[in-house]
Amino acid sequence: MPPAASTDPPRPQAAGPCLGHGIGLRRAHWPALLDDPQGLAPAAGVDFFELLTENHLSPGPGRRAARRAAARRPIVLHGTALNIGGLDPLDRDYLAAVAALAHDTGARWISDHLCFSGAHGEAFHDLIPVPRTVEALDHVSRRIDAVRGALPDVPFALENPSYYIQYAGQPMDELTFWQRLIDRTGVRLLLDINNVYVNCANHPGGDPDAFVDGLPAHAVQQIHLAGHTDLGDVIIDTHGAPMIDPVVALYQRVLRRIGPVSTLFEWDNDLPALPVLLAENARARAAAQAVLGPAGPGGRL
Ligand SMILES: [Fe+2]
Image (cartoon, rainbow, N blue to C red):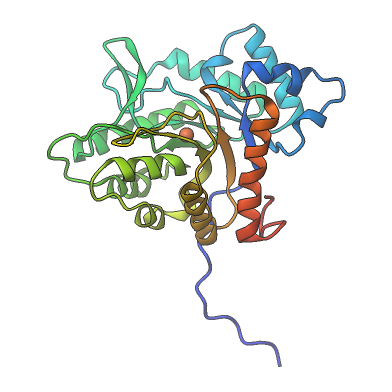
C-alpha cells in the first residue's frame, strides 16, 4: 500500500534560482579575485558576484572587470541610480546602458532600491524612502512596468532600503506597502535582512519577525546581509562591520520559512582584506546550512 499523501501544505518557496553565497566585487579585490592566474582559488567559497551597476556601465576598467568576473562566476547587478520612486522621467539612456551591461555579463537579475534618489535632474547620492501612500503605490507600479519593458530579458528586483525618517500621515505600514506592490506588479524583492533589523530598531512598533513572516515568499529573489553601527539612540546601516547574531537569526528564520535563497554579504565602508570578507560569507553559508542542511533542498547553499 503506498504511503498516504502528506496533507501538509507545501512550503512556500523563494524565486529561483539559488546561486548560493556571493560577495560584492570591489575594486580593491579585483587583483585577487580576477587577475590571479590560479583562477578561482582566491574566490573559494564565493558562488556569485554582485556588481554595483553604475561602476561598470561605461567602457573602461570597470567594464573589463565585469567581463572577467562573468567568466568566473554568475553575475547579478545592483544599482542605486534608477530612481524608481522619483518624479523625473525614467532615464532611458541609463536603462539602455544597464540592459547592455546585463547582456554583456549574462546577469541573472538586476536590482535597485525602493526609493527616490534624485529630483529635477540632480542625483541625491542618497536613498530617500518613498511615502507609503496610494499615489506612490500607483506611481512606482507604473514605473516598474516601464523598467521591465526596457529590460525584458532579465528579472527585476527592488530592495527594502534602510530609512531614518517617517512621513506624517502615511496610510500604510512598510509591510503592507510591499505586499500591495508585489501583488500588483509581481516585482521581485531583494530582501535586506540587516535593513529590516535596523528599520525595526529605529522606528516605533517595528517587529522584524512579523515583517519577514508577512512577505510573499515567491517574490524573494535575493537576500542581503550586512553589519551596522549602533550609536545608542539610532542604528546606522553602515555596511562596515560583521553582522550581529540577531541578524543571523532573522536570516535563518526566513530560510526556515521559504527555503534556499541567493545570499550576498555586503561590506562597503572600511572594506576589509579579502579573507575577512570571505570569512563573513562563510559564516552566512554556515548559518544557512544549519537551517537547511549541507546541500539545501532544491538549490545550492
Ligand atoms: Fe542591501
